Image (cartoon, rainbow, N blue to C red; front, top):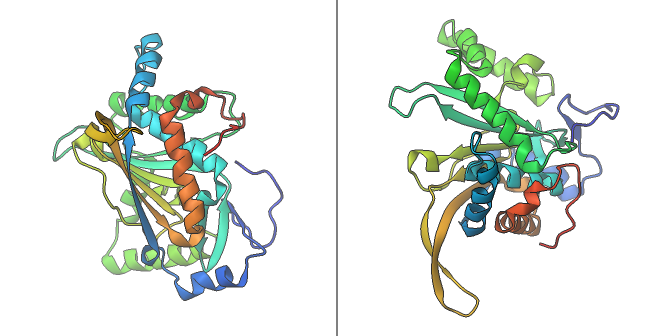
Length: 297
């Protein structure tokens, strides 16, 4: 999705201005300008039986760098955004933009303790890659984890914040006001914008890794992030079968908070159906990212 087309007047460095909007959408962000005031929340319980069987097969052939359910969810979200590009849209400065890349932000703890340091991870998905979709982010995430565990360094985002935090409160407030204004006009300094986790397609939180269930998480008026996904702890859950009987299966809850201004209910419904389809048939994630998926959902 990384676009190489010539920028037109009104485009940003990271996105293309959406043109030809109908009158309702032209006024929508002016009537309701704050992203956090336009949140829609979707909660889903996913049968993870197919994913468990898929991971067992994948890891039998690759025991050293194991695939996890989180890699599967990342890959499924990547494919979903790739096929449902309106989910990569954002609103800032009263205008709609289509982001020119697919990216994910997350927080990783270096140690599971109250004092364990946190590091910000920003991963880009390449929709033109010849690798299977599952491998595109799996390999990048494995590289990050290895670096985090073997090097005592901070991420670039933390380094920038450490520098910006030096100074009195009035200076920090003035600095943030200036940056907010620059961002609204698409002029945020490149080095800051690329390290800001709130400039990603999806901000994702794996609460299951700290033994919590999925739930609601707010959006932020800062940055351009329109979708926040919370992943819950894997557990056993009863599901109804087609014949009315009940089976207890492994399950994971997903909480999806999104800016309702970037699409309508039907678009969101079809997007969630696609995500569930990919998690029910994870073998689809072994198809190269650049290849189209001809599936019904």
